[in-house]
Amino acid sequence: MVVFETSGFIDSHSHLRASSLSSQGIGQCENLEEALIRFSAMTAVDPYDEALVACSELILGGVTGVQFMFHVFGDKEQYQRQLAEVLRGVYDSGIRALAILGVTDQAEYLPTSFSGQSPLPKWTEPARGLSGTELGEIYEWAKSHYPSLEFGIGPVGPQWCSDGLMEELGELAAEGMRIHSHLLESPRQRKWESENPLDRLDRFGLLGPKTSLAHCVWCNDQELNTLAEKGAQSVTCPGSNRILGAGKANIEAWSESGVQFGFGLDSSAEEILPIEIAELAMDRDSALEALTSGGRSCTDLETHLDTVTWADEELTRCLEVWIDGKEMVSEGALQDAEKYQAAKERISHTLFEDRANREGRIAELDRAMPNYQRELDSCLG
Ligand SMILES: [Zn+2]
Image (cartoon, rainbow, N blue to C red; front, side, top):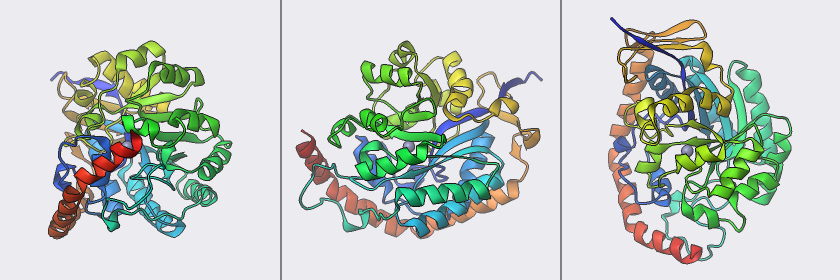
């Protein structure tokens, strides 16, 4: 039998969600702001199970390295408790990972210029309370507990962090860890805060060769040139951009600008088919490059030491995966399939149990949506 071999792929932008968007009642969204608020109606599942299942499914799809944005609303204690469970799941899966500890403290669902009564249900209001200094403490804790994983930090989006928090992140970044953030995932984000989001990263010392930025759908030529000049990388997420209504990145302009870029699934794929999804935006050779060397430029993960064998030339059916000399998948099945299956079943059970409540939350959002969109348009012009 002819088999095809590649190095391990890198998913350069993930949130390690294990349940598909459709199983959470999220369909095609009209714009990103609709999608983001709909995420808040999702059923929360056990964080260990979720991380283990998400990483295991990436491995089954030939992905041996992942950069993921960890973020939960809440104070230091809530953040660290949940992070500990996620890291345990990532570690147990055996994937290579760069965990980005993300943070926000302003304007998550309504722009900074918004004043007045929120059109959104009360339960969507984000809990806050994690300072930059505390994030630094958690970063140190995580590094010492999981020396085999890589860690970085970042604003979840520059427009969602106050000047004070951005300044604290800039001070932490002086240590030289990797930085990751979402950037211009929607046209509205350009005016979400009074300052251009890319300038905002730069002003606080968060834009350099160790910075990768997810989506960048709405970056203009000048912004792409700035990214290239600073040696920062971008990550395109064509599958997610489509389903979440973010738009379509102009990959030709990215290539012309000379910016290095990787590819991300953004936890939005119904099935982990990295090459096929990357090919929504680019040809086969560029897709392979974005998934391998491009991903390495975004993460520094050593996936070139991993091998994946495929049953088909299209690279959609994965037969074997080796990570750092260890066999993870053989004959298309995980080595530790039992643990994965059990976690997957617990997640399905939680989704089933919460179904009526989730549908209630979704119905509330459906009712609030027209008003929410109107408010956004009126304060963003
Ligand atoms: Zn994302």
